[in-house]
Image (cartoon, rainbow, N blue to C red; front, side, top):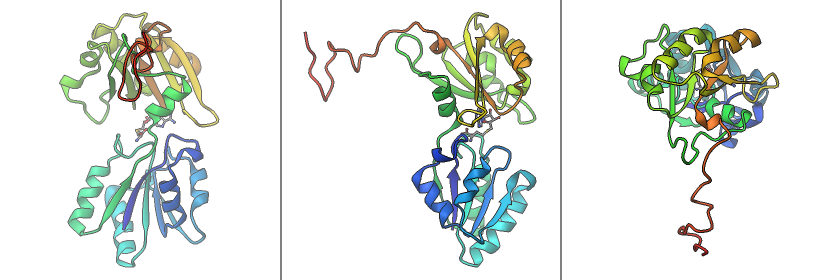
Length: 251
Ligand code: SAH
């Protein structure tokens, strides 16, 4: 069987208990070497066959999975963060379906959660925003026009922008084009939860300059929105005058 596993954002103790158990009992591991912390591979048993998918095509990945399955082995396909975001797992699952190979998926802590933790931030603040847009700039992989950064920026929702730290000039221009005020708070979060983690707070108008100044051009998330501002309303859930299914309101 093939197990897709989310490795988490970097710190090796942020993998789930289930993911760690699957690594400990794996015969074959194919890990996304560009972003998965190699320290996680220390969990693999002696003799485990390890492949770095950063150097492989989809066909090569499948050519490792197929004989492993025929030999009755357990294969872990280790993706960074959670596999459901920019993980290219759908094409692997479809190919496994076609080959009749069973698989399952163990979620992980996505880097947008790791980045919020690093920035000590909450995306969903009452009176500020109750939605998070997870998106990216168009690069070699296109993004549908209706999902352009400018289109999302017009909503004023909290944004976690992946795969775009190398395009900060363009990103800044798109955000401004969409109506983001230049003073809108932003943060560049580099390698969230890794020892070299860096949180650079700035504004949308200073995104590109801040990236240049701190030498951040990859392995970073760009957070944008007023949720990074100190101003918000407190939650209804913990308000004494607000009754919930678990608690009566006081007067
Ligand atoms: N599935 C992953 C995302 C893979 S796409 C997840 O759920 O997080 C790769 C992009 O994720 C990188 O370009 C970067 O924007 C972001 N990323 C991954 N790990 C990160 C980390 N530790 N800190 C900041 N950004 C990270």
